[in-house]
Length: 449
Image (cartoon, rainbow, N blue to C red; front, side, top):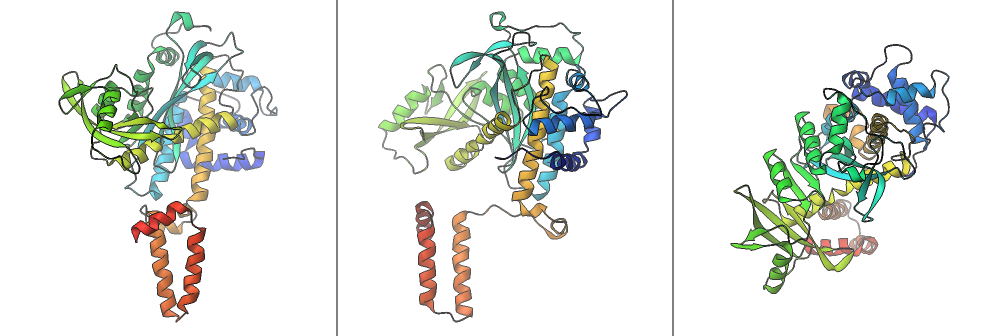
């Protein structure tokens, strides 16, 4: 995804194929995106997608002889359009397609995170607010783009979103219009004013209701709380998140009430030795409304500072610490999504003032990313290249790299014996092969042998 500027012809062919794959016309009707007369909606979407992939704003994009830019703005600003449903239905169709050539043993997960949607130079943007940036630890003018995505460990797809404003009157800067409480426009704006964790659960509920088959929910410390783990467990999801090192959250460990820092110091003073891939792992219990919720904690070294540590937690206590670390590492995919969206898909680079138009802009960004993710998956995964796979192909299970290398070495040894080759020649080849491997793989091969 490093080079995204494409010719209009390339984008056109990609969009047409994508449209047929996901049945875009049906999705547009279901999302209430339609025009009573004139140009068809999917033509407007293709023009918007072309402008986005070429990194042009709505005002800098090349004019079309079929319609004016005012027509595009009217389509984006329509308060009756359900942009969230559009993004969700696109993702569902792509997930259904990708699952055909995915090992069923892969753990599917929902990933929750948000990113700053800056509007530093805006004054009249609807629902504009001062929002807190977790990274810079300061306030900016704009929104928080809350996103729930789906991952199978290979492909990430944005599944739903909410453009969050602020319910605090002191932080509200833009225009706040009034709508009929029965309308979609009012519901969308009311959602933007609620608490972030509550809206995240609403988006997860909508995803599960649509038929998404995920067993895990991944999130960072901003969303991590005993209540969040409990709510996810009540929905049939096992949460995996990073805990805050705070003294405000307590749990029970071996009958004693502790916080994260106290438990870490207790483990350090014990005779337990640290592991290669993590420091310590412990079972604790949280009390939620009188119910005991068992949680497994894993303490790992902070790569940014070896003298500090991070704490991962999950309600799926049957997972090994290594599996918990591996699953939480998958959360980085949503960070990559935000990076690609901001760097290449004009994520927060739009002059639209309407809140509905901003939601439409985010939906176009998600549409562009869906096309890129599909292209990446098909280019990497050879099992999607021909119809022969659908006739004879079977999903390939995951294989450890050390097992693959050992299998390769055993196979070559067998060929040497069959063709009566000189063993010294083979030894020389193996020596050069081992020298070319990274030190980490050499150690793994030594352990495996």
